[in-house]
Amino acid sequence: MNPPDDLRADPLAVEALPRHTTPTWEVELLISGVAVFAMLQLPGLLDDAIFAWRPRFNQDWSTVVFLLYVYSKAAAVLLAGTFVIHLLLRARWIALVGLHSIYPRGIDWERLRAGRIAREVESARMGSMEDVIERADNRATTVFAAGVMLASTLVGLTLAVVGFGLALLACNAAGFAFDPFILFPLMALLVVPFAAAQVADRRYGDQLRPGSPGYRLVHGAMRGYSRMGMGVANNPVMALLASHGGQRRTILMTITTMSIVLFAVGGSYVAMRKPDAFGSFAMFPAMRSGDPHKVDAIHYDDQRNPTRDQPVPHIQGMVIAGDYLRLTVPYEPIRDDPAMRRSCPQLPTLAETQQSATALACLQALHGVMLDGQKLASLRYEVGSDPGTGRPALLAMIDVRALTRGRHELQIARPPRDRASRTSDHDLPYWRIPFWR
Image (cartoon, rainbow, N blue to C red):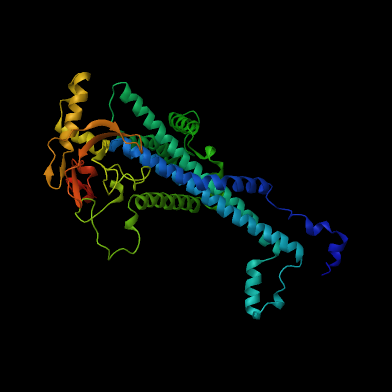
C-alpha cells in the first residue's frame, strides 16, 4: 500500500503522535500499570484485617473500625477500577493511533455495507480520525484524574475518622469517657460553619464591603477551612472538572459513584459473613446456627477459617478420637462486655487481685455447658487464647471416655446481645455443636 503524495514528502507526519496528545500519557500508563496490581490485592488484605480486628472491640468501637474498613476498601476499589478502566481506554487510544498510521486517510465509508443516510449520520457523529483520537486521549486522562480525585476524597474521610477516633481514645485514656457515636455529630458540626459561610458568600458576598464585620467573618471562616483542607483550592481536579463539565453534573457523578462503591463494599462484607445468603438456595432448608440439624464448619477447629469466621465456640473436630474434648470459647467484647456488666456490676469496683477470679467466675456462669442435655456441673474453664487468632478465650477439657459410640451434642450458653445489636440469629440462648465418637 503506497501512502499519498503529501505523506511521501514528510514520512514523519504519520509516525508522530497527534499534536494535541496529553503530555502525561506515558506517566499515566506507568502509574496505572504498576499500581493496578497492588490495588487489586489491597481489598483482600483489608477484608482479612476487618475480620481480625472487629471482634476485638465492643459495639461502639466496632462501628468505628467498620467505617474505617468501608472507606479504605472503597478507596482501594475505586483506584483499582480506575486504573483498569484507564488501561483499557489508553489501549484503545494506542490502537487508534496505530491504525491511523496504517490507514492515514481514515475510514473509507464508501466500502462499508451501509446506506447513504447511515453513512451521513455515522460520519457526522464521529468526525475525523484526528477528532476520534483526541477524544479517546482526553477521555482516558479524565477517567484517570476523576478516579484519583474520588479515591483521595475517601482517603480524606478515612483520615478524618482516624483523627477523631484517636482524639476520643486520648480523652478516654485521660479519664474523660466519651461515647464513640459522638464522632458522627462532631464531624457534622465541623462542616456546618463551612457550609454556612459558603451560602452567605454566594448570597451576600457581592454586597459585603471589604473590612466590614460580615466580610471579615466570612473571609476568616473560608480561609480557616481552606487551611484545614476543605475548599476548592485543595481539590483542583474537582474544580477543573466542575468548571468545564458542569458543577451539578460533576457533583452528581461524584456522589453517585461514591455511593455505589460504598454500598458495594458493605454488600460484599455481608456476603463474606453469610455466603449462603447469595445464590439460588431458596429450596434448601434454612437453619440458624443453633438449630438441631445444622452442622456448622465454624465450630470445628480443623474446618473453620480463623481469619474470616466469626468468634464462636469450637472443638478440635467432628470426630473425637481421644479421651478429652477441647472446648474453646472466644471472648467477644460485643456480646460479653455488656453481659458481664449486667451480671457482675461489682467488677469495676473490685481490687485488681479480685477482678481476675471474679471475672472468670462471671464468664463461667454466662457460658455454661450441657452435654447431651445434661448440665456439666464439674466443668472448669481456664483462661487462655484462641491459637488461630491470638484473641483471649476460655478453654475447657471435657472428659468423654464414658460416652458411647455415635452422635453427641454440646450446648454452650451465650448471653443475649444488647437490643441495638441483636439479630434473629443471636436470639438463640446457646450454641449447638454436634460431634461423634
